[in-house]
Length: 92
Image (tube, rainbow, N blue to C red; front, side):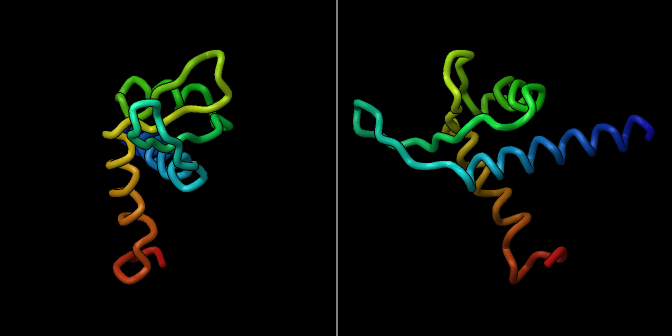
């Protein structure tokens, strides 16, 4: 596998993991009344750390779940359209 293929694979894994976090997550309220998506962190630590490094999720080493940041939530909704929009998805 050349470097370009490896980069594409890593990007795809990150995108699909973020999408799965979004799809399997649940909505919670904060003390200030805003809402966020929380999901179990049953995915590879490398990809979770990469998503956190891009400010798409936030995680704690003590917690068994992560939450999507506003940016992560917006990106996950874009990925939903990219991968799961059945009317316009060439993969469907």
